[in-house]
Image (cartoon, rainbow, N blue to C red; front, side, top):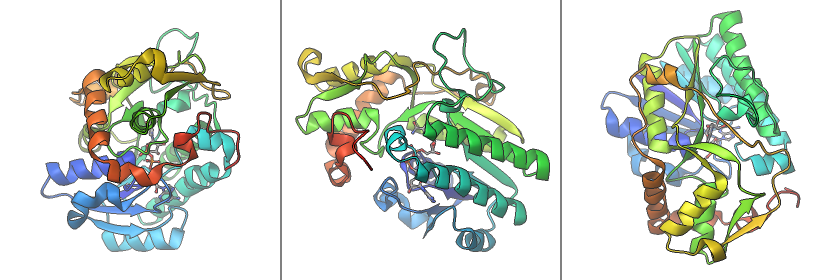
Length: 334
Ligand SMILES: NC(=O)c1ccc[n+]([C@@H]2O[C@H](COP(=O)([O-])OP(=O)(O)OC[C@H]3O[C@@H](n4cnc5c(N)ncnc54)[C@H](O)[C@@H]3O)[C@@H](O)[C@H]2O)c1
């Protein structure tokens, strides 16, 4: 199988690539990535000899087309996106350019060159805030995004499905919950908390920290995506959740305790993010029917992640910008 991974040098993409290379002999992997601040070859260093790589923007139609013509993928998986909600509050334009227009370009290339299967990595955030709502979102739940980030992801998610219906492009859409684990940029909650504590700064909690998320270890996500590609159905959407619900405050407290610090002293509460969703929740019977189960519980996953960041300061030290170090990163310009 030949898999073209768009955005494969980021957090989830690189973990998926590593999983493929270690798990299968016969899979050929090609990574196409713009290498923004979030994408780095360091994320792929241990598998670089086993893959092919081109630096490129998904919105660059000519370059992407050349790569697809040359590589002839069986599957195109699109992870490429601007992903940080704090940044989308400060500067939404790159989110629309990459997540909406960029995804549109990938669909045009896939349609024209008749790529056999297109897989889009969407997000649970497209369902919007489920606070005060009974139950959890199934795949048919209406999309109701809240932030510029989630609105751009919902737009792309809808475009993918429209290309299936209008042009017959074979697709599968995957909507994962919050992922965490090695190689995640320290602007995101779990590594941000770990790295700040390692640098002697307090952990921060946005608002009262009661926002509930479902936490999935990134290696479990790689297995879920593999199951969707190998055993999933065409023109189908798959929620991928862990069923490990915990509030942001609980996750930060757990990390503080794993690191032997004092939750009473080492956590500060700062202003809540404007418009932040209070609760995400999805049902996941469809992906479980493919034989997939998450293997790593939240506490074990957090312990493994803390250990990885402890051992890999070389990896995160160059990434300490204000989105990591400022207590309230939004609102001070790009
Ligand atoms: N991390 C999560 O918890 C989570 C949860 C649900 C869904 N998602 C989705 O999964 C995907 C991957 O998320 P992540 O956390 O790995 O993100 P990330 O920010 O770590 O990586 C994004 C990657 O996309 C690349 N990229 C950005 N713009 C590009 C462009 N114009 N052309 C080519 N490459 C470009 C970056 O260089 C980077 O390698 C995203 O689509 C995101 O919306 C993430």
